[in-house]
Length: 212
Image 1: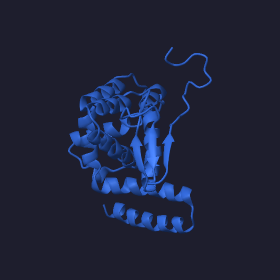
Image 2: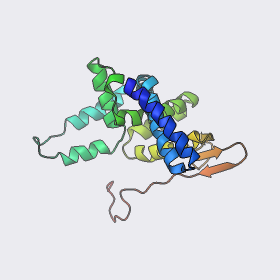
Image 3: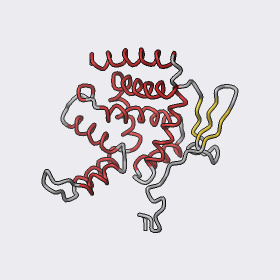
């Protein structure tokens, strides 16, 4: 824990220096790291628990069991296919690790990793959306994060929103809350900006998509 607290102090000092140098890219990078460190220090366990309650622990356990049931080559042979399937949902590995630690009675704080820290940041925002939204929003969020085909696009949308949060802007998830046809509405109190978040599909340029 002392290492995490020292890391938080150092990051804050670095952010001050980057702000003084007007290096916005560096400020953004450091703020993301600071957010992740602070979440692990204070709230990680709670955020994982809230997320699993909202999205269904059983949904993740089924995904993990299905992945673990795949045939695997003996080490050191690479298990490329299973690794590929696991990577399709960036939340899956962290959720599996959390559930494993919980089952073994181990502390998340004492076993924190960069991957768990990063996912904790996403879960904090997702949990806030679930808390503020109605039943329809909860169902949408659950569908987006559990589905391997949609989760990456949704996390990209969260990355954009988090960047504006750090700059002190208000952000509304318009499409998620069925308030419009674009993704985010960002406001600094004077100017409002409508944002449509787009990512490049792995099927881009293919004549036959993977779904076919």
